[in-house]
Length: 521
View (cartoon, rainbow, N blue to C red):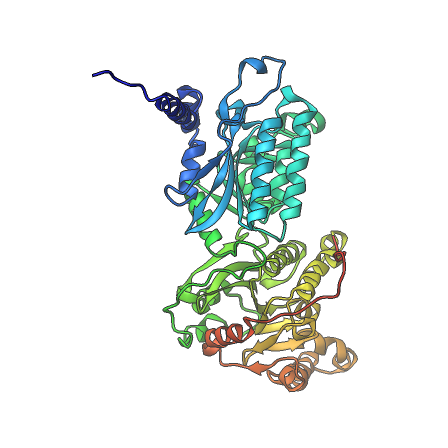
């Protein structure tokens, strides 16, 4: 019997071998070096980010066409970046990931074209985009062509801003122009020890300024998560980082035309919060951890804090109430007494803008003594930076609920989504103090001469403090004037929030037609 050769099979076999080789990488030694640094390979990372078996790669066979400096003899497939789409918890997500084993993950013309294509696809499909960054910047051998590739990425980051969620996961070096793309995205996650971001490296810094510093000291995960605020979260390893990226995506809508995903909730909305009576001290000068309050009122006590190590005097978190996603902005009395300062204002403003862009309702928990006084704050532009938070709240059209837990003084009270800024519903606990300033400070100003002239100034001061508090700072003063919709039992805070958000779920508010606003910068 004569055997026949299937003319198609040799081509399939060759394709299979080629794709297997692409997944293994160009050189086993390069893979070993990657693992030796505590880093995963590009496909290992994608497998952890996406649902099993869901990844569809795009342009895996792409190769550069550059010549010179030996490039014509080194043309690996993928050109150092893997692009494609898959699913996270069953929803479509687009991804591009640098492969440090190929040209150090450096960006060239073909590399950039692949990223541009997948970004365009994500925007057209209305699905989130995740970048897994581990690259050495522009490919120097390709000259200005590589730099132009970055321009295309930045333009697409900006075009996609507020349209689809964009996450940047920094798993290795991200230097020079490459660092600007994560800065344009919604969330930046970094891994300690392996990830660094900076515009100019330690060698250049030393040559120009004489300062000696390490890579981690200049742009490591803890630096950006705690000092610069560039990174929202820092992790000890890649697996934890990518697991949180998946969880974060589960809280976000696919695009700005959709609501965040709902889940079934077994936590009763009318669950009494008895613990709240003891969590918040009656004395307004005593601190406490506002995160304990968020944990008590959120579904099953779960929330995802953003920027936990930066500007700790305000807490920003994504959580769920009755199965529906909401953003929480809360003063943190355990840090700087919960005052608003430059960094806290910027952090909260950015979070409010993100929530508003992606149809995530806002719940603001207020316990604020004012703005932080000081020469450094004034010279640093606290007026301008504080106005960012003011602008963000005023511009937000999503459902907005504010709750005064204890004190709310001066301009900081107004800025923290007060009723006058357009909050849909404003509530307060019975121990609230809503005033221009604390009773002690107000009495000292109003009755200054009388106190100074008294035989017993301390006794007179205490008497005047009581008078001022009785007239203007009692718990029902704001409610009597319509600045608070209701004074509620703290134990019913969760129920109040769930029912209010349910009522506001279909809220719609149009803004005047304009190209865009001009917020303070």
